[in-house]
Image (cartoon, rainbow, N blue to C red; front, side, top):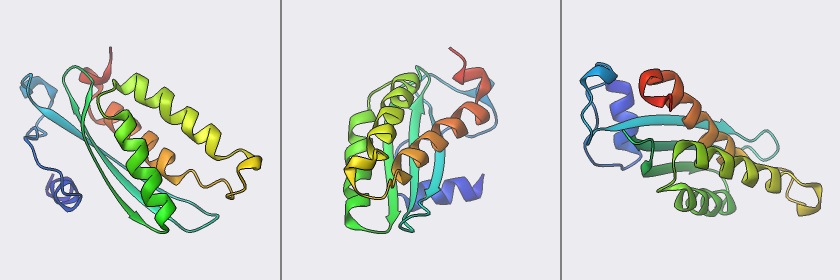
Length: 136
């Protein structure tokens, strides 16, 4: 609980977070955190993503930390800007489309999709942490 709170604080995300005691104690205005991390083996970029998801399964907060090149930072900012306000299912579909575009050979960038992998890892983290809430 302390580690997740520290990770959330390091990413610079404010707002009210649930007490993590369980979904049965959650109120409608609670935001549930989901954390994901991915590393690209081709370029060595490391991306950490935090998502704040409310009771309606809508992504209301986003944050990221990138250890790598400037293009990975820009890609993380753009990807999270696009998925903010989407439901978890819509964000997962959109992120998978972004990852498919990024890894095409004609893009010539070595196939670095660490940002998309980190977002998908955060969504998987949400569905495993909060199964009662994450089921539609």
